[in-house]
Length: 115
Length: 254
Image 1: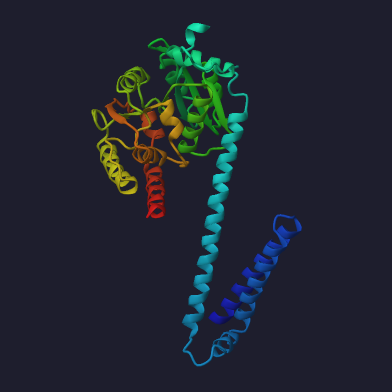
Image 2: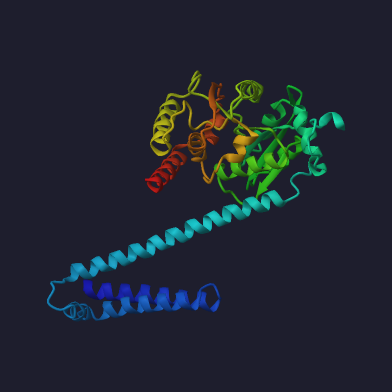
């Protein structure tokens, strides 16, 4: 029952994310690279949710080394943190640019003329 | 015109104005920068109490309206202040940086920063400016800790803790690192490399004083704690943001 709920949960979120990404892409808010990246990422998540055995196949492909589910999720967490880090860096850069732009605009106004 | 030219000096006519200004100390004004966000209730009274002249120097009030939605800019303009308006709220630090740039653009020789909520007494500006000139110092910091009379105990303790944190982050201890009441010489304002958007700008200024080896003095000031200024001043969440901002800077520096 829990496994089924997890599958539905993953498919639902994956479908929403892909749909939103597609809408943004169509509205030219998202680049084709980002659209493809997120579509492939969420498709992978949906596929793994529907066929969890694929993870075992993947892990066995690593050969003799011991690799369990922990390794798989560890890699997933590292990837997620990388994404969060990139978002953090980009938001901070954008905030700085926005601040500078607003300051420049403020000082370009006719503020020296007292009405 | 010749009386303004040094003997044997090469005359650069494009700079004649600068030469005249440099020989006439009273020509350049003193700018009082007031970063303000939704301060329409207090700003007019604060500007009204700023002295119009100090030692024969004109005093100009510059209000940086940090995206206010309550008509702060209009209230300030009605009192004769210059108003620089941010299109949206950026924070006290960004507003202070804009104000310092505006003051330099107006040719101010001395720049005062103070809170717009009435927490600082504008009548003390003259004393702090005098201290800067007589020092001469690059920066004078108005310190509430040196005259803590009337200061709520919680604020006193919080300020001491923030002094300690400022020391950890920037390696410099001053008596009131979070004071917004400061006086800068033009040169000091020009060399400060400020980037903070929020309240952590006060600590950043302390760090810059240390980094640029500026000469400074802390001078006691009286803070006016009214219900309004207490409600408008730094509250708990601002404090948390300030600490997080300082810790982020500390991590970056290490």
